Every structure is written in structure tokens, then in C-alpha cells.
Image 1 (cartoon, rainbow, N blue to C red):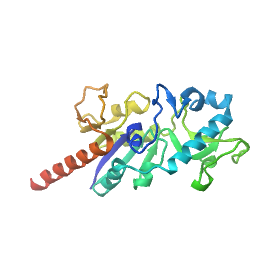
Image 2: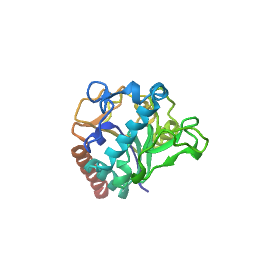
Image 3: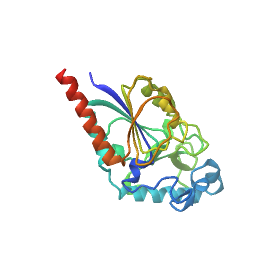
Image 4: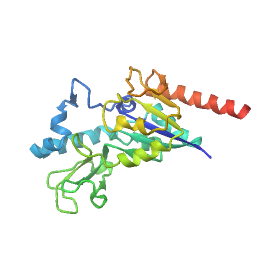
Length: 241
């Protein structure tokens, strides 16, 4: 039986592919204030600005490719039962070949009802040739289509599902996240204490836990290359015993 590998990914893995993070440029995201484009209040103030902003992000996403970090995670499905819990809204994990991805903060390529955003009946996948959404485009309930994104201040519907996988993890891997954004940062608390934890990040990351964490202080691609090697070595040692 394959071991359960649960992976928490953040902006650092997508940054290597060219996707900007919320914290780029001193609190600006793609030259916009986070308060204006990533909060319910910002959408209420100026839905056209927010709609156009996410249109531009989708267009940018079409020109980006999964990096080696994404690809190696997908390849690990040959050896592990892999669940990726991501804070990223892009689809780079899926495009790399990962088959089980939980998006905590929504998905950039989807839109939904502005009245009932988490109702599955209203969530719609956009095709790349129709990534532009316009004011006046309506969901099935007659409300304006909005990005299927969990904005700051909104509930995180997928967190309970993510917790259940963390509780069953045999190995827990963290890639490219500051561990400052909750509730995602709290997922480590649900991982059994005897489960090995690995962290890949070129920067120092403060972990609010007394558990032992194996730190690989590298970027996502280089760090994943080292992680895969470690996993292969461990499996080889077990085979020889």
C-alpha cells in the first residue's frame, strides 16, 4: 500500500513559473492594492476593476508553464498517494499532472455566483478562449458572475477536507509558503506528531510547532529534486532491510 504524502503548497512554487504573489511589491498584487482586488469590500466598491483584474490574471496564466517542482510532485504519484493542498489559485499543479488537488483559496479559471459563491450549481469552469468575463455576464441564479476566489475575510470552504487528509498523512511536505496565512498555516497542527515533516523554502520560515522539521533551504524546483532523492534513498534502505 502506498504511503499518504500530503503537500501544502504556497506562492513560492508558482513564483518560479512567473506567477506574482500577494506580497510582491510591498503589499501590491500586479500593481493593485490587495484591499481593492482581493476582498468582498473591494468587489462591492468596484466590480468592474475586480473583474478586469482577474481577466488579466487568467490571460497571464495561459502563458505560464509548470516548473520542475510541479512536475516532480506529479511524478511522486507513482510511489505515493499524493494529496496537494494548495493556497494558490492557478492550475499549474493540474497542468503538471497532479490528480488530487485541494484549492483552499479558490480557482482562477472558474467563476461563480456573486450571491451564492460556494454553491456547486453556480461554479463554472472557463475555457482559455473565453477567459474574459464581462459586467452583465450572469450566473444561473441571475447574479453577476464573480471570480471563484476565496478573498480575504471570507470563509474557506475546503479547509475541513484538507484537515481530514492532514490527519491521515504518513509524510507531510510544505513548499513555498510563509506559514503566516490562516487557516492554511494551522494545518500542520492536524498532522500526527510522529509523522515526518519536510519544508522546502529558500527563506527562513518560522514554524509554530515544537516538532522536528527537516528543512531544505532551496527554491521549489531544486528543493523538490532533493526531496525526491531523499524519498528514494529511504525506500532503498527499507528494501535492503
